Amino acid sequence: MIFIKLTKRQEEIIEIVKKNQPITSEQIAEKLNLTRAALRPDLAILTMTGILEARPKVGYVYSKKGQNTLKYKSIKEITVGEIKSKPTVVSEDMSIYDSIIQLFINDTGTLFVENKGYLTGAVSRKDFLKITLGNTDIHKVPVGIIMTRMPNIITITDNESAYEAARRIIEHEIDSLPVVEKVKTEDGKEMYKITGKVSKTTITRLFVELGKE
Amino acid sequence: MIFIKLTKRQEEIIEIVKKNQPITSEQIAEKLNLTRAALRPDLAILTMTGILEARPKVGYVYSKKGQNTLKYKSIKEITVGEIKSKPTVVSEDMSIYDSIIQLFINDTGTLFVENKGYLTGAVSRKDFLKITLGNTDIHKVPVGIIMTRMPNIITITDNESAYEAARRIIEHEIDSLPVVEKVKTEDGKEMYKITGKVSKTTITRLFVELGKE
Image 1: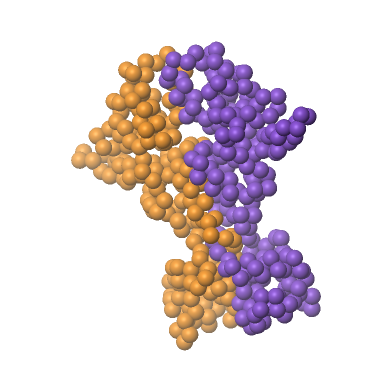
Image 2: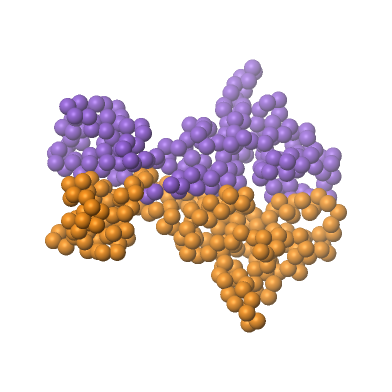
């Protein structure tokens, strides 16, 4: 597996083909204000990587799957929806102690908290560890008291990229993002339903998948 | 950024060029028992990705850096030595409580434990959380009592790949690997010195780097 970075012009060509396919090299050259000769190396690499397909007497078409023996997928094309895993969700009134038990049972690093089916918060191993060091009665105090509460939670949606999820995790120094779907409640409020999660584990697993033969 | 997977033959060509450079396409064809014409598409893609360089009247050479506008780096070519980060190390006799404080101060998920300069163990947030739920006197009991002890720790070395580090993290369901150097003690024992760590955070950060423009 190797990475190659496409040039801006190659990215432009892909966009042009996606929108106008099938399209001949003359037509692409015209749109870019270039000669066909100048375009030839770019078209060669785009067809060889299987991103574009050259159909004789028809023109170039965008090929979703890598053709021939070459496979490709842009990091930015892999979506959260494809890689998300199952979140562990508890309700706001569960005790801190019982929530920690859920953390262990599900072998996860972050719990997401719901109220009436909507995402209201998140708690990490670090939050729990901090609490257990103090004098809080973890058998009585509910997890809703110590959780990080919406809207202070960084979220992501199915259609965003795995790259964007990883970027957000690093930027905000968190372990995990809830994958959410925005919904309107009966009284017109905007709320989130949780449909999955993307964690550092998800990204590390994806990295291994991409590196595999 | 796109991924392409090289064919076996393309990998073979790279190996042949590495060993025999500069080498002409005739000579490569001969080694592979192929005609030059059959080889042409493979050589085209290898030069276009910048992996090989075609020098007129000299032949093909292996180009460590992607030439022209294309950059490439194999996931398996990125080494642990390039990406490792600083480990947080405590000594075996530090109390559990003080160790947890170190965990927070250094904002890390795993502590590595040393005795006389050699790696002897590791403790994770999860281990600490489990202990704080029980009746252990965390101010008195030293971290050496609860740590996972060598040789039950999965390690990695500078020259292994980032891919291999990620693979080991996923396979063994751990958060972090110590990067180690094997040394012989005066009495001939084999011990490890810790020189860094690779965690899920390291891999996620690398994933973001690779995906960046």
